[in-house]
Image 1 (cartoon, rainbow, N blue to C red):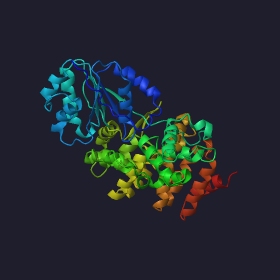
Image 2 (cartoon, one colour):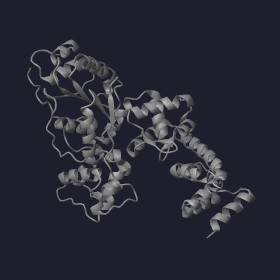
Image 3 (tube, rainbow, N blue to C red):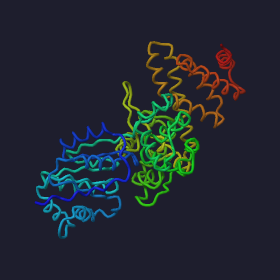
Image 4 (cartoon, rainbow, N blue to C red):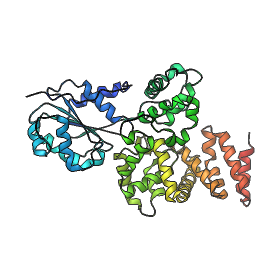
Length: 453
């Protein structure tokens, strides 16, 4: 039997990082017949799959790439696969594909399955059952859901977090920084990482979540902006990060198009939960999501399943802790979800529900902060600190000064013990200034903390 021609495109840019991932995936590729790379849009699933396939030498009949991004009709998938195989004669029906593949030892790379997920799953299952030596490497924003499938979520590139060293010599340890510098050198050959611009580079990589597509689009802007100007303009990232290059998929030309592609594949209920989750400032628990997001079309009992679907579709990240599982939107996805939340007219409702939820949490925590469960409650409040700040901001924005004062007083021991004393005084003073009819007891307690030194 003839060896299938190697159908992989020659990359035009250098592959950066992911050496550990490639080692793990190389092992998995030898242990499973269906390996699906999942992850958020722009995270680099396709590029990683192609690099993995290029390094795979064990397939006697070669490697074949099937690109489905431009395919819209599920009925034409067999034809697309047949064309990719470059097999003599017509191969555009499933039974013809099965005969053509036979018992060949082939790696079939099926790229961008998410918009045709059911049809892709059906075809791949049939081919794997009929061709015992076939191995499939798929990319999709969600798993195919087949028996025997090994799913592997592609993470963002490593990036520096705020507070970590931003010295020039330290930054190159991060993959996101190395990718940004590589693409920056292509856009502006004179660009160099210096002690002066290191902080701006670190900020860009952090605020773009280490997403390769976003970093590449950002680096292209160095043709017309300094790196400091680029960092300062990321609050309008969707307008800023549009490609200035020709060619390529439309959804890879702008960061906005990439996110919209994922959003369009959601059901109406999933879209509703997705935008409402943007109200959380920095992650949430299942219980918080049920409390804040279940109204007008979403009942509390549905939140778990909807949240699981958003996780499956790579829009929500799971963070497993010792005491609780938390969930988070990448900042880029949250920025988009916030635009949808504002457009929906639900922003005020989410703000109020967030305030009510975190008022209840702080009321429960206040007495416990002086008891035997203090350590557990301090950790819980630290994890929720950004959301508590958002609740205080919501109270101020809605002129709910009494509630702001109540929340601030409940948090005082947390702020004191965890070293947030300056912030606590500032927050408490602001809440106190807005209240004209606070009780004498509350006013005295607030003044005692604000005036203490």
